[in-house]
Image (cartoon, rainbow, N blue to C red; front, side):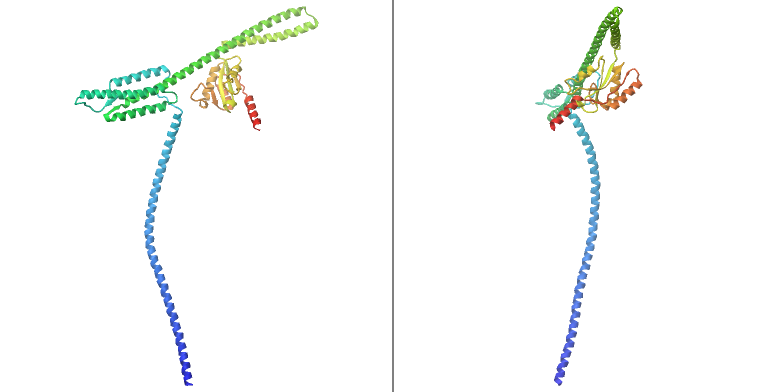
Length: 449
């Protein structure tokens, strides 16, 4: 019994101690876990501290980079500004090159007559001869000696300079002989290139062609070009004057022919009327009535013939009277393109028919035929009125203008109000029939369908 109690006590004590050991073990494990957690927290804190240092360093780097970016932005703005400036200059150069590719040349002398250009050319060529004579066209900057002799060295350089000038003059003369209305810029470049190339070759001997001599050669090129242009203008002006003389002669011939025909008709009607009046005295009844009607008809025809004769005589006496015509040709030139011209012919439409001949694919439409006692002045005022609307600005003798018909009507009205002597009766037809052109379009459309 005692042993049972003792064993039971030992079991109880063992259980108690086991329970305590478990509690202590649990607390120990909890402490270990807390220790691990504290270590992990400490590690994180340590890491945070390291990151804070890094952040500060990173902030410094970022601020530095921000400054670099700002500097780059400033430089970029400066470069963008320079690029824009260069683009503007590039466009100017491209435009100039584009214009030059069409042979455009801005006159440097602008004399009124070709003879003045010829005189200036002679003057420039004399200046060139004078420079060669004075040895200022090509020079040498060193006194050379040959075999110890200065005279031999001088002779050698003289011959060398002569050779250099001959080569340069040959290039320039070839350029001058080839000059046309559309190649002046390329020939100018060719002469400058020859000048630079020859001077580079002569550089080893300390020799060069002077800039003054180059400028004289370029002036000769410019003058030759302008001289030819002026000669061409004068030839065209002569052709225009001759055409005007022929046109006026045709007008006078037409007027004279109309006068002669009117006189002939007048005489014929006078004789017929005289005969009818003699016959009516002997006639009776129906015959007399018929002759009376015939006399009235002949009287009207005689009056018309007399009017036509007087008109022809009046037109012949009024040397400036004529018609200013406004015509279009949409099949040939398109919409809102009008020719404003003048004719002194008694039948002005004959002139329009000539203009619509084989040189254009379709005939012209007449929008106005304005009679004026001073037709040349009327035409000139209209041309000045629309000078900025000329289709061909290089040649003022071309009479085509890009305007609307309403603008032309307004211009004619304004000119007529300002000067009562230039215009009389004004009537416009605004619709362009363009019959053949429209038929052609219709035929082409039907063929396509």
